[in-house]
Image 1: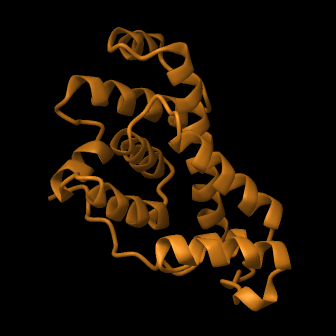
Image 2: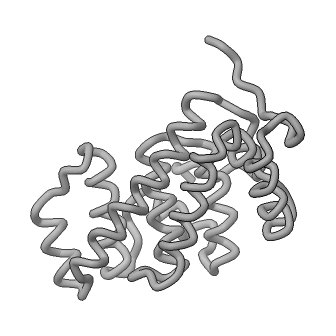
Image 3: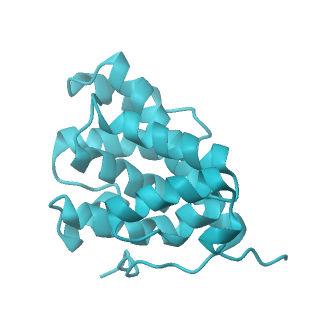
Length: 181
């Protein structure tokens, strides 16, 4: 298999360089995954704009979005995104043990677990969710808007999961804990 290297910023096109300079200012670093996505400035811009749009005016809180990111990354077995989103989930107030519960789809809060189980089902079944999981999601007070945004979040995370799966770039976040503890 061809090795895909994390590019140096100065080897990317100007649009990617400009975007990644802003990422550096905001995050304090340029994650290897973002730099690698920067091989395509269009893909990088689209990913970041989608992430930003779903963060503002979203049906989901920052904690809920991280739970979705974790369960989708678990389904897709993406060690990079599991590491990154475990770190982000902890910054959002989840404990290490709670990140494991999310990844096992066994979170103790019924409302959040309904989101986690639905996201897991959609990711595992190529978009087809179990009708009972959809019913549970709506019974917890989520709307049609939330369902569409959930699918967008799953799609976004699947994109980054697939980039990692096909590049196997170095993980530059602390590793996520094992599921069995």
